[in-house]
Image 1 (tube, rainbow over the protein chains, first blue to last red):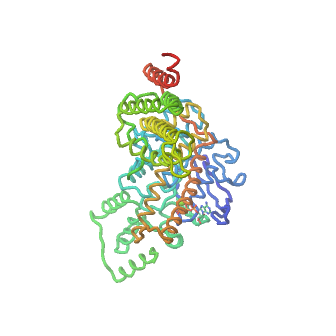
Image 2 (cartoon, rainbow over the protein chains, first blue to last red):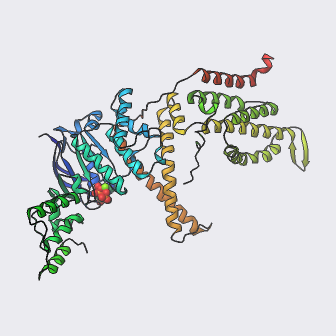
Image 3 (cartoon, helix red, strand yellow):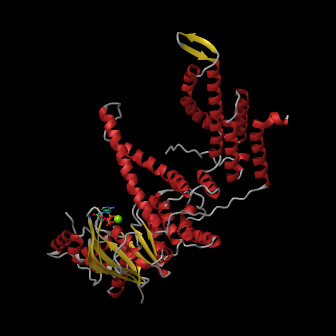
Length: 302
Length: 253
Ligand SMILES: Nc1ncnc2c1ncn2[C@@H]1O[C@H](COP(=O)(O)OP(=O)(O)OP(=O)(O)O)[C@@H](O)[C@H]1O
Ligand SMILES: [Mg+2]
């Protein structure tokens, strides 16, 4: 398997002296689905700015597909790494949606036909067909967010980085966006996402990095969410389904792995019921409430 | 939200709206220059008449131009007072050492009429084209890139900044703030504008980051498809001809 991103001993302070990153080591393979979590101000955005060379780092601290990022030409760099930032108003800076989505491809030196093709393809990918002539300030927030994604997809990057893609979206837009991202990942694009939305996290990650200026944890979502110490330290929460099933185990529900999403929960439940006697058995015993209280306490921030 | 949009009526269907944007800019510029240099009140009035006629052809609502012309007139109004007092010539009234001259009146009328027709033309030009297309037309006409970028960003972010201002304003009003023309009111307003500038600066930095990450290297490039048709040549030619005739008809007739 090829290494898509390798960050080695990356340390960064902003010019005003704010330390933002300390000794970051990350290795992401091609095609992986990665989520980076961490509290506000943990340095997620700062890390992303290093991954496409917007913020400069020392030689060989950031390698993209085995190449030192600093040595890559602009056109090459934007073909490898595309970043979708938090605020769509920052990314739609041209007069019309067409101009915005065409901006990257034109800078890559593609000819006119190809640019138009790519704009069309990118817009249909995010469900904004026919929006070419619209001006950004007349779009809804969700539409702007999708347009911002299209403006990066049109460069057809092999690595797609998204900073809080699901924040402030209504449930339908959020589900749509998660679908789009997963489809892209299935097409072989490596996705790296920063987010606070823990309920969506399991859908968007094979592996999670926990960042709090340093990398303080790494593992699959189940490992991360089982570590209540880590969650508490980094102001994180476990998905609701996960917590619910953990409570169920206190009531005597017997399962070795806890589900991370509703779909998984249905699957697990069905499996336990079918392998048992056609139903599941819950009961109260002496310590049940004590256990529930203790568990909830360990996941509580207050 | 109510924005002061110059291109609010750009989607109306009229010959002027359908005029090729590049040809439109050039033609209207020629006409504006021509009308600004007209040397008699009669000619200037004819110019204003022509401008009004084009305005009618363009089917723009009356309020659109009148509202803006009022502002221009307000700026120019002092001329009507200053010039009769300061330009030398035939006196029509005298009070001690203060003389009011006919030439002064005529001259100030001339200036105001010229300005009104020039502004009307400029408003028709901008009002009948979507602003992003005007920018692209300028880009095609090889206007320097820096200027294009300034126009582009102004157009894109003026609305974002207006929104930001209104959000801040609402936040303050909801905390009981009322603007009064006293020291406190002004200092709060000053703070607000300061905040707005800082926010804009932060935003500029983030926009710049996102431009860099899309391969920006200093000049924005875009794809534009304009096509000049026979009718565009016809309109352009006749308008430019009118503009020239206003200055040279005495040679022809
Ligand atoms: N331009 C800047 N100048 C100085 N300090 C900055 C700048 N941008 C960010 N910081 C600081 O760097 C640290 C990391 O910020 P960063 O934006 O990377 O966090 P984040 O993980 O993206 O947070 P959030 O979840 O709120 O988006 C913070 O302490 C922040 O205040
Ligand atoms: Mg951030």
